[in-house]
Amino acid sequence: MKRLLAGYLSWLLTLLSMPFSPSPAMAAAVATQLEANCVDTSIWTPPIAKAYAKSLMKWEYPHWNRSEWRALAKLWGKESGWRHQAANPKSSAYGIAQVLKTKPGTPAPRQIERGLVYIEHRYNKPSKAWAHWRAKGWY
Image: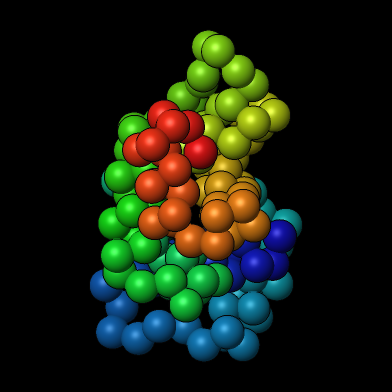
């Protein structure tokens, strides 16, 4: 939860166009303070989800470059249109990343985090997941 909130803080500062990025120590300290709070998913629009995912990618996956972001944006754009309530009628996939067995109501930040973990685990990086999607129609 602390990592999620640290990512949220980084995203928030990026969104507010702060002139600096928080250090990991600062973000962890603020995340500790905010740990009891939950992120309200009712305000999550596709642009907000994209901004959060981009920030979380920079924070958690610094080895992925800009082209990886473009691949992820295309992939999840095709999968869900970046809508956190997108449901797949043919499977148990749900949410922004359309990860299987994701329950309706799962907060958007968790959907994004889980999707990035899945991509790294299965494909190593978004460009490979996007290439697989283009070839097979799923990832």
